[in-house]
Length: 177
Length: 104
Image (cartoon, rainbow over all chains, first blue to last red; front, side, top):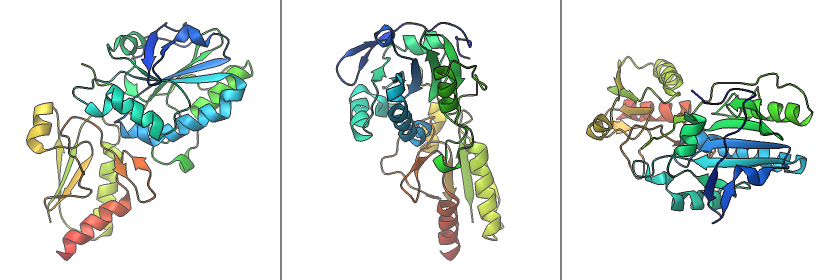
């Protein structure tokens, strides 16, 4: 179960990104919303959703929204989730957001992340406003009925309550060491 | 015809995958029982050559043989007919394998 409840403050972190830079959550002060997504390379649920992650960033960048994807998986047991493989995936899928490596798994543990993908949406004050799945259909983007993350972003950006602040994240389990 | 369905409990797609398999078996008029195998450890995954959940084996053949098999307790990625990746095999993929086994 996630260690953050809705209306809790974000937990700080600093992680290395596939771009060769360190990324701290504080670096994104001033953004209207920050979306932390626990993710990885190998999980078919992530692979089914990752184009939609890119599209969300594309659609919301002008509104001051920043996505950050974090991979915390054990790369010994799951070699596809290694840092070099992360770099390749980011290039292949043209990630337009930082893809960060939580090698020690400390951040994933701190957040209580359980699945990939698992979304934590924070407002401009780094308060958690939405936690859970990206939308309601991992299998078919055309069959999505509930765009949970997009609706939550729209509400946060408009200064309104999020009508569905929590959903069950659907995906692979985080692969702990 | 022998049909095996192998799955890992922590992958959410197994119920839907089994439902699809049952639907396809019925649609193809196949009277075979489906052996359902729950894979519960990394050791079992190695022993069963389990390449991820869900895996469907028809007469000894994986319905979508992986190019580089990696045996682990993990969810499996299927490439669908339209090129998308999904945690589930499509009904078309399942039916193709069932028909091939029927004709053999």
